[in-house]
Amino acid sequence: MEIRPAQKKDIRPLAELWAHAFPGERTVEQRIRQLEAGGVYGGIETAWISGDGGHAQGAFRAYRLQQYLHGGIVPMMGLAAVAVAASARRRGLGAELCRTALRHARERGDVLSVLYPFRPSFYEALGWGLAGTMLSFRFLPESLPVTHAAPDVIELRDPVTVIAPCYDRVAPRLNGMIDRTSRIWRQHLDWPDVHVYGTMRGGECVAYAIVHHGAQPRAEDRQLTIRELIAIDDDAYARMLSWVALQREAWRIVQYETRPSERLDLRLVEPRTAGEPPVRALWAEVARAARGPMVRVVNVKLALESRQQWGTHAVGCRFTLRIADRELPQNGGPFNVMVSDGRARVTDGDPFDTCIDVGAPAFAQIFAGEMSVSEAVRLGKARVTGDVSVLDALFEPRSEFVLLDEF
Image 1 (tube, one colour):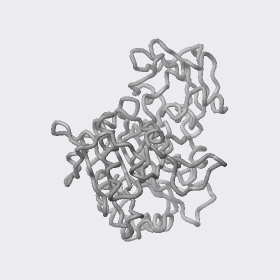
Image 2 (cartoon, one colour; image 1 turned 90 degrees about the horizontal axis):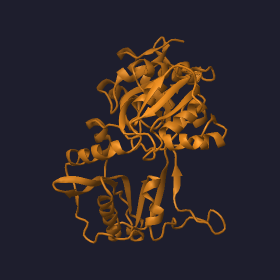
Image 3 (tube, helix red, strand yellow; image 1 turned 60 degrees about the vertical axis):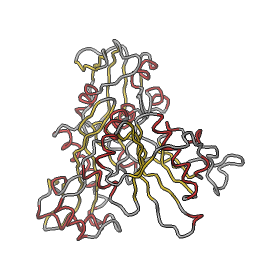
Image 4 (cartoon, one colour; image 1 turned 30 degrees about the vertical axis):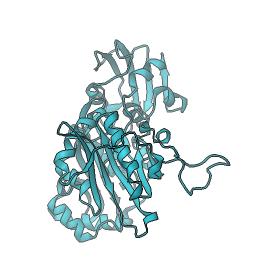
């Protein structure tokens, strides 16, 4: 069945399909209004449909986003709302929708694709690999040490204009963050009981926390949920954590999903989750690991050449890369890669002495910094001839992969 870009006449069939595929999220009428007005990441122009006679058999949305990765920013396809009608399932339509999305992304110049999977194995078979870990901590405020007795944190009443520059300073240093539009900011802030607190330095915001207060009637049940905490340096970060610690009179529990590098397990005086049974006889839960996004490289040559940060062995390093990619055979290679002065150049010719043979999902994880080359070899996901330690150092990221936006 034909898969084509959606038109205005397809709005109701799309809304009905998505309301059935994702029950409880939004009604048909709400989805119609969103498609007509344009949502956070776009409107009907982002949708693709398969179907005829006014009925949608399948659909997806291909958002055009900009993602920070390894010191640069690249165009990325956020693949979302992949859905197949109940009457059309078990016919391979879901996979074909994803293949169409990949071809579309490559044709329009996207370098990467990111999605949130309903089942990781389905998307791994199509070339996406899991990347990024968040650790969910639930702790008492008094478990955090107070390093700044007066952290100078204030509530920001009109926060976007204040905190967006702070985000824009920090996001390029991390791997995976996206460039946020005003609509994306509103998605983060326009919720009941959401508040923003920040600390200022020289008239500029140097750290902020987006928090949810909740409405628990009993004081002992009150929870402060930190939805996002961004800081430009260690001192600003410590001030925000001190402010959290000082909320012990108002909030009995703090919920915070952190990046592993924040090392909250070592910052908390009592990192163990209260009330949880032992994981083993004498081992207690500290945090729950959350895995969300999956990453795929849509254009390998562009990805290699657009990377602006390579590892410590980047001077004069060269290797040949071959990728098993059934969905995008253009990514197969071989690619002869020469890295010098922090940039990569991809050439043709005879293969170099150091070679990597890897599948598309594992290469995406290596490129995103989720997995080292030697880990891929040990797990049976790659083969290497030559010095694998040099490749580990070359692909080593300066920051773990993290994406705080969901689409």
